[in-house]
Length: 150
Image (cartoon, rainbow, N blue to C red; front, top):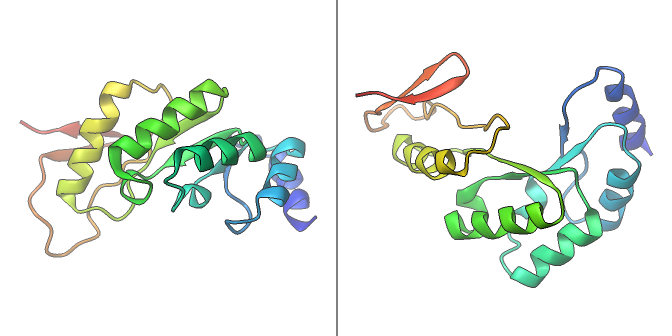
């Protein structure tokens, strides 16, 4: 009930969506929230550790989220992400890709994987600036866009 109240309060602000508002593993409660929410819900942590195809199908069919957030390094790499994307699109569930805590090398790989998908939604690709001993990067964040430097 508390999560539902918060979602109702957020709806007034007309925000795009909220990342998973309750702890992962509560499929029935999450399904109820997704069915009743005035604020779209994007699952992210719920996807981590779900590597079996049938389990992915079951999760999306039961919860019916409005969106899923894909963190390739945490959900089975690029092939796991491809599987989630296909399943989500088959159920009219939106998606976007984010980087987690990757180095510049990991961020570069995720950016190159993401670009050809041509998803019109903004993607959540970080700058890789978390590490003090990071490798040099050919990526440049200009405003809200990530670019490859020549």
